[in-house]
Image 1 (cartoon, rainbow, N blue to C red):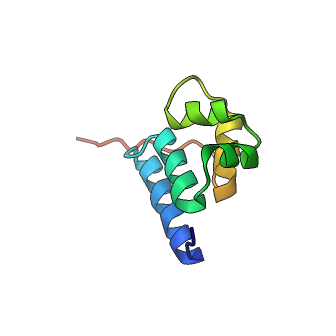
Image 2: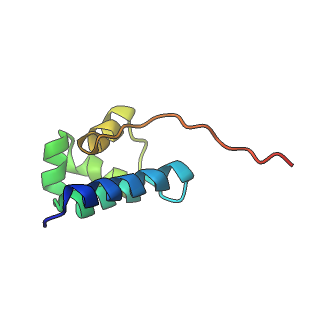
Length: 92
């Protein structure tokens, strides 16, 4: 799988925006980053992130109660980490 640096950056940015807007779940974002950006299988990606395959599977399926450390481990290769964002409130 070959992806240009610019296409990679745009894809990561698009996924990051989906997370920030709440239109993309964390598990789906991780799966898309893994498959579309790296092209790696779960085993390879888990090894690269230094987490177990089981943990990665749970993250991608939105199962369990993942630690911040595990979530940051899967986002780190993309220059991302978990954080706090302001919730926009509509003033009526």
